[in-house]
Image (cartoon, rainbow, N blue to C red):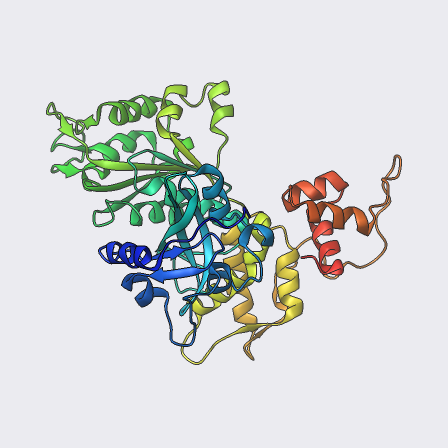
Length: 443
């Protein structure tokens, strides 16, 4: 951190706080040494507590319970970045609040004197309401870096009108992320309409999307509004857009480009009014090369792509997700707990089916946990036995070099690569790498 700049005078701080009182969002004033100088009423109501004093205390101690600034604790520090930029910086953090850990969208703005020295900062805090860093009865749940990156992208794009493309494997929670975009947008009070593109045959797709007039085809007994019309004032979520037939892609492109459509069998052109969010697990760029997805449509829907991480990239979220699913499925007086050995097995599995597979595994385990305890034997018999038994299989060809503990410690300390990339660099499977991390106390 740079050397301390001249601090604001007491009367200047009071004048600034008086100005911030008109802000509905929680805001605090910080000096360049991370000390909280003042807070507006909105902050005191949302983040203040009698047993947790904050005035005169370091922001990183109050918000994170760290002994060091965020950047020295392995996180992005908006104060450090704002000092370098002499301008605002924004980041999504998990803060300790009177309610427990919560996702908070933090924006920090420096206050400069006549010599362009930073004399203080104003920090705005916005609690993310559509995701939880604690076990939850519904919605998005997670606190891992990979999850937080996706959530931060949602926060960035939600207030705009840009189309959003959610890309990720099946079972990664695309509909929940799409709903999060909707709930964080200015259209949150409008409808959230889901179009399952994989479940509609081409013959029905146009009618379902645009609606039809009475007599437009056999069986059309009356006029029907389509899903585009139903989404007026809200968000239209096209799930698995990679499954849209080529013939319909042209009409979908026309809808997005012109903002107009016609019901099947109608001549009247109607105006559309929706925010577009699309999702797919398919490689659209490869499909463009294969000729099965239109390039012009891709660039229309992919204005703001968001990668949704598979569960194997956010293994640290598994205990949180497990507690959430057990809460959601519990009946009165039937709370379940998971044995440590069962939890270790859950965290060691690769989860090719992602969160959907985890939920199904827990529902299965619930039926066997007669005494309210989930044990390893209650989990599915995956191909990787837990714990591993028997000698390692012999592999023909030259032997791979042994991976030492220092190699693993070095990569973890560098902090540049994901768990998957570190495993690949060491020539280990991700599962084996995770077990080595646990044995070293680095998981």
